[in-house]
Image 1 (cartoon, rainbow, N blue to C red):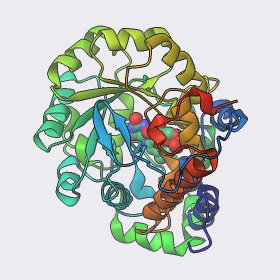
Image 2: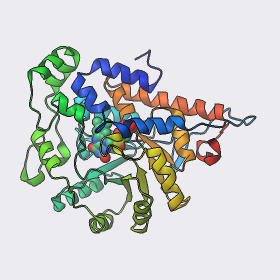
Image 3: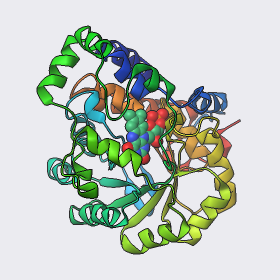
Image 4: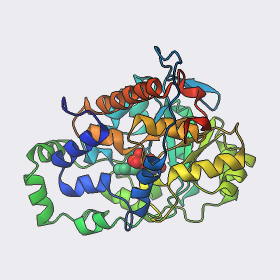
Length: 376
Ligand SMILES: Cc1cc2nc3c(=O)[nH]c(=O)nc-3n(C[C@H](O)[C@H](O)[C@H](O)COP(=O)(O)O)c2cc1C
């Protein structure tokens, strides 16, 4: 990893390290990958107008989100199935993040359970909820998160059904997994990954053990969850979840200004603008563009964050300029995790160094003070 100086470098290393179907599962998007590439293109299009002759000798990365101070403007996006990349990748990412004061969002479909994660790390933990058809089970998840001290509930609203990720279909990555000769060959040609995977056993989705009475936590339960995503999840059910969770609640997957306004009216504490990293609706608006429209609709004080496509420190500065208090990253840190326990920390340090340098070169002493005047 010594030669990795950017997230793109880590991505290239991950591509070599992982069997193709696993890399594609992480890296790929839905359909024609229009939204996946547009997330980047829309960020790349934005240009910064640097200011000069300001004291930037000690750039301040601190941020505020939902009234709380954070040492950096980063949050980790929830990611399921991380153990496919490296056993206990969830833990490696969470440790790297929380030790830097960066909130880690544990997915409903994480491969380390809520309880084990809460025991293993000190620092800010959030829990992400996929709303499932069995309503009582959603309540169990919420109660468990509260009991283990998760600070913030993130309700993901853009998974009415799984996106059509065609690379996964071509690679035979389906749930339940049907192992083929090609998978065996892919494993044999990546022996390090294969040995680790075999030694660790198939990923276990501990949070959903017990769903619909199924006591397993392996791939069959993942299939059951996939088949039981609650496509009927509507505003009334949102109100019930809001009533049930007493802490801060953030809604992830917001893109339309009218939805944003309604969510605020119904008591959401924060809005997470996201298109799931281009993995759900292909053709959906780029996240950074959705953010600008929503900020205009909800006004300056509603706490907002963004993910989908963030790869550079300057991306976070652009997001701040368009109205996000903080930004979240998914793949950036997961590419790092493919490199083992040290990888996630490397990914985070690359980004934090890039923000620091970006602030200096753009003449911004404080990240939090960035406003729309940063951009051309
Ligand atoms: C492998 C993988 C698994 C994911 N699993 C979840 C999940 O369980 N819950 C969720 O809300 N989003 C999930 N996401 C979406 C991320 O939370 C996030 O929105 C997206 O990765 C952000 O884009 P980025 O990867 O370009 O940073 C997943 C993304 C990836 C790459």
